[in-house]
Image 1 (cartoon, rainbow, N blue to C red):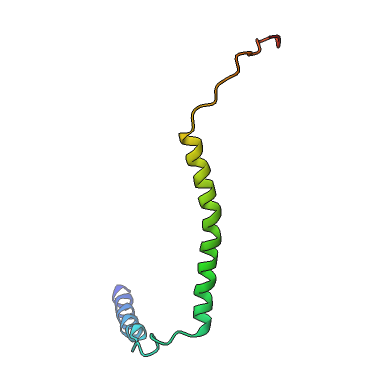
Image 2: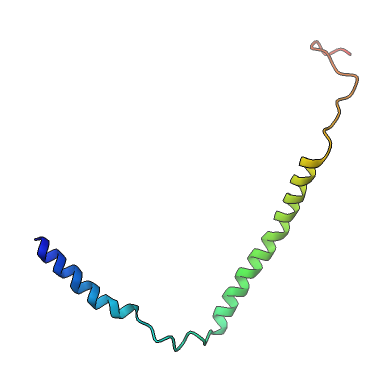
Length: 81
């Protein structure tokens, strides 16, 4: 059983090895759909970059701003001043 599995695996690898070979002839010719796909991906990244920069700026402003001071008229536990 082990030799049958080993032989069939070896034959399968030999047959499938030629399927991974490529001449590279069509690598330089990208169609307009490929460029449209890349442009759409770039638009998604660009439109997500704007809100992320706004949130990042708000985070930095919150980190480096001075702490808010509490008012001098604090309420006691019973709610009176």
